[in-house]
Image 1 (cartoon, one colour):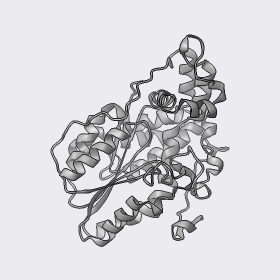
Image 2 (spheres, helix red, strand yellow):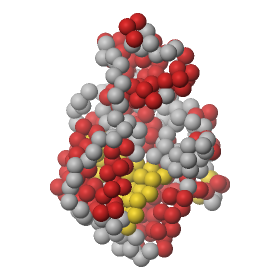
Image 3 (tube, one colour):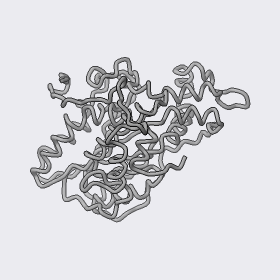
Image 4 (cartoon, one colour):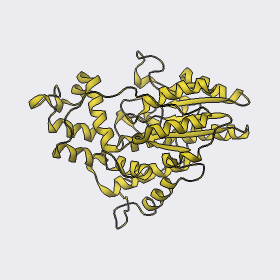
Length: 352
């Protein structure tokens, strides 16, 4: 059992990550009792949890409490975050965004501690002090992993406290086809931080190969380093930088603990994806799909009790490198087997 000293000595639950060495696959290659059960229940919805965009008709307005959005990178999160901020005001909900840039871009990411973020502090104060609090909360980079820490240490106890007041805490997130997200992230990274990415990925050089396009080596190495980020995010949170949470979540040196999944090994990928899907099904009120973002936005509006409004597209990626050649497609698909499975559990067939 791990203890988090810097957040007031909060005891973690016994989080058991999927085994790396002994995945014990079924004869079909997937983890026994996970894939078939999860796919069926996730698509159909599971009462108060596990609802997907296919089930938005059953979404009900909240009376009070917290609507929490877990923002996984390059899944439409900027659009959702901005939409929630605008709609929150119309619905008389406070709005908070907790992530490592909350303290300003001059604060090194590795020093960010969400417990000291004024947005988090004020959110908790509102939830604790008001009889019927109303707030939306966006959680993004720099926050510890949802499955390994954040749910059991923070959100679930808060949910129980709010229920005692006659209120709710509803957890929501959005997943995207893994290969589509990987292509978007490649373009986004090199569009916005070309020098940083070229330094982090020497095989990319200036990213330009013949004809002004990245080389196969560049694309394939980036894909391997970026492997299965959505599954990683559910378990461990953002893994791009060392942080004060490394000793808690087991990501020393900022290394992706799921990095070995870049091998595309079927049994291990299935086990990790099923674990993430199982967790989201049990804890989430709504899991949306990037491919149907308007439906997810309408569901958020319904929960806040306001008329549905079209969600604007924010923070789009405009760079469009050629990432669809056979070699590059194979690398990207191989590096995102778990993410594609996670997306499939909730969203069905993909649009890549």
